[in-house]
Image (cartoon, rainbow, N blue to C red; front, side):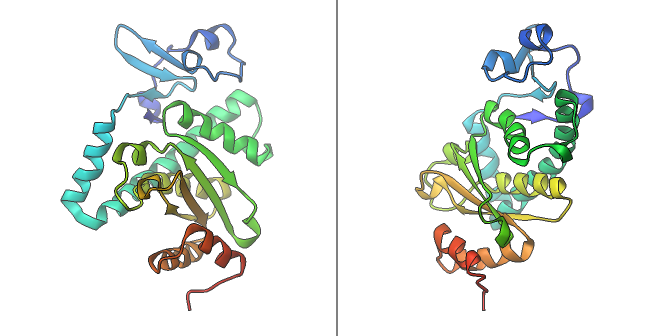
Length: 233
């Protein structure tokens, strides 16, 4: 997990690669991306963001604790947490991306931009992703997430559990396109699927998808309905 708060970013903590080659972009090894301050135990990543180590027990305790306290509303809380995280991380990403690559995010290739944004999350243990833009003309984007930290920790519980990811995608992409977008998890590793799948789009599209999902539609069914311009009525 990483903090994007400027006040919490450790000063002068840099990996050996960044100290010797600060313009390097191929910082994909664990020891290149992270640096450890032995005296304080602080961990910083390539972008000077403070990181903490969290166990699977922490994730389980967070999710199950919320469910015990607020019941079904826990999913909304996790989504809201993720959304705020996405909004703040979008600003942090703009800062370090433009500093590292010397150009505006508005003038960068979209897929390069997205892969660059997600790489730190992969390094931090949040999983790998695939972004499917093929349905953008229908007003939606599909995101496949592999090895979700939340779903992997909770195991097969028979329901979607990656609400914090859905909120994260909503917050980040809304900032990126300067437009309010919502996100919903259509299938989850915790439902016995091999990977998690999210739908990102305008709120009305997501509301329709939520309706179909509650009616028993699969992710593939929902994608087909959206391509056909389906409605809930």
